[in-house]
Length: 133
Image (cartoon, rainbow, N blue to C red):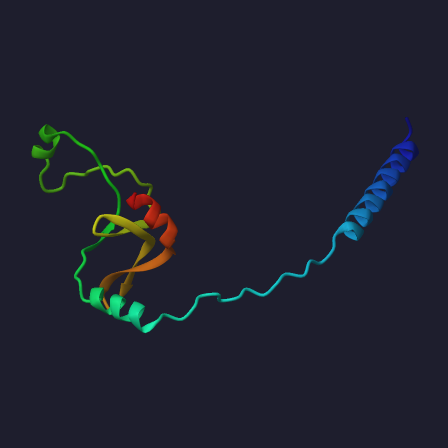
């Protein structure tokens, strides 16, 4: 096989690929999508008064970096400087819990020399309700 044959094969393959790419780009079409609508209906006065009645109930919110299950023997051996391995990899989001129920995931931030949590993912109401059952 000469170098001219190899060059011709290469040129033919490139031409074939260009034709296939042209066909693929012709097949792609722009799709029109409908605008999202906010279909939430306004609250009635009765619903608003029901909601107001629970607004001042205190809840416990906690941020969970991870968990570890250890025996009481190992727990009693812990002292200053001990390291407890958690079930999370460094950099994974924290769990934001309200009264022991997962409501969101977040990341640690520092604001004015104080730690805080930036919520990155909030669990939907339907998912939270499913976990209650």
